[in-house]
Length: 467
Image (cartoon, rainbow, N blue to C red; front, side, top):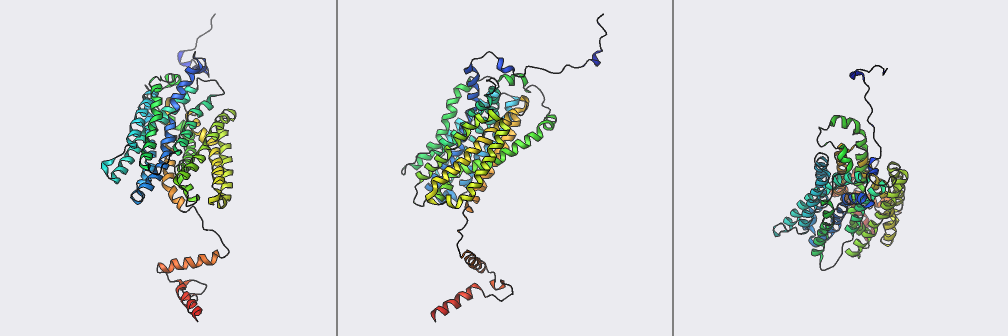
């Protein structure tokens, strides 16, 4: 009557099905949905501020202490060491955010940020200059660990929180609370007050202001609960099958990490050294305040690109938004390279700021807005923190490498002007260089020994003139 039943072993397993958008049905008000995303993501303001302000602080330290600063290795270490701490923090907090707690990991990173941002502003080091530089370097590394925690714990929790928002607007809210916050940090970090007689106070205050954002967010983060998606899909109490994870997500993670490396390599190195670039373009009579002022103007271009990009990402999707943005940025980059001899003239600093600013703005519209979005939403919840952490860490390694090699790039940035007699003059200079280093220039020419050394020729020319 009821038909025969299949043995248990032969019964087909029913596929796992669920409502594809269950978080949207949770009974919560709009504010209850949006404030966790804001509390989780907005801490990345500290990343932008703390990393960018060091460029201006480094310029001030160079002006205050001269060779004691530039020839000690402190200039490179203080500018770049935060990235090393950030990479370390990302990897540690990427694991704890998956295997311990999203909210507790985020709270711990906030406390680390507050403590070491404050200590950095008061760096003393026993009273000696080198001791102070060493202390500042150590505190910059440790504050980097706190910044590192903001990425896997904060951004991942933010992406999960945006899953409870209205469909069609989730990308923009994630971008507004993460990348746009980083960009505002860049802008504020570039906006350093300058007083001729108070530089020692200025650099300490500038670093100390990095305490404010995490302090503001601390109260909200104390009230955070685990994201709903994390509660359902976490592998906190399970052994993560890393072999299967790598097989499934490895190729995707490689691509996302590579894009992030390339983008951070250019963005952070250009951002940190933008005041140095401008000092080479501005007239020699320009003040430090003018350099900082133009630096702020350039950094402001990050904002419109990031804001418009948040809407664009919802409109065309993160993948296409990234490709379109980076393509347009490349076109402007070629234009900027072609016009550089003109833009680099002191009288055209305004034109340089606009063209360079558009270049940066398009970078935010494309990869800047969408790399973190792709990293946080292209992986399952159970390993999302570690997946995101690896991609972001590779990006920060790009930033770290960029800040070390960018001074060398700047040193060779300016190609000599090409005149009508450049070929002859360049040959003369090269001969002088060879002779100065003991190389016999009589070997030059089509026949060995046919061409006299430059020194002998100059002697004969002088004698001819006297006669």
